[in-house]
Length: 295
Image 1: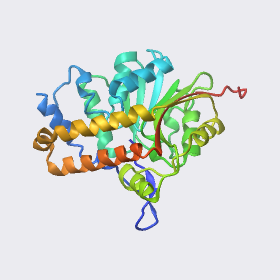
Image 2 (image 1 turned 180 degrees about the vertical axis):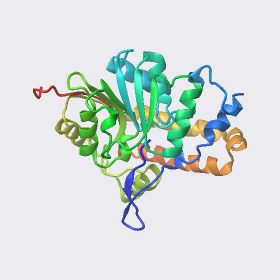
Image 3 (image 1 turned 90 degrees about the horizontal axis):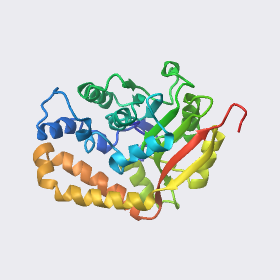
């Protein structure tokens, strides 16, 4: 997960912030203990982590859709931008046997992801890297060597879409490289209150419209952009998530405590309100890198 650089409403200055969703790192170990998996113990079936190691919508189906759309297999080398706890990277490794570089900016999440991958015995395929895709000094990542760049609900935290998409394009092989991402976009102009919620609760700003999104991709070196609107599905997902979370309050608070429950309740409610406003949209992007000849 890449924290957003967003204007601080109080000071007017930009600062790096961390989403409410990603502050309680200990929730991973708490849930594992509840499954009977002790601290540091091997995790025989990594799929048991799916509900606690991923921070996107539609669970494993979203990752499997990426694997299928990109045609990933054992010969594929993949870069996961904003890889979080490593759930998508591990699932790609398990399902497609692909080699994945999982890049995460937040140090504590990066370390926990690395630990989980080791415990799942997937360190031979999933290689964790702490860093920011936009920063210089990433030449050792393997510029121009990936068949795919993937990301799930991370790009929305990065305001400079032109720089982001250009860097993603640069990472792809000159021929046949593809981008696959789940992201947010703006359906209609947000109200002042919604803009504040986006900044303070979701930590994103300057979301592009559909037309602006596609223009950014094409200007950055992509073609054949597939813009799949997922707004209706994600609104339903967020509604179901909130309802299930509230129903599970007793168990959740007994395992993680009330402060953690309150933080997540606030976040889940804010995101659902934004989707239900009709102004926030969800999209699944798939695009190809233009060939050296520009086609």
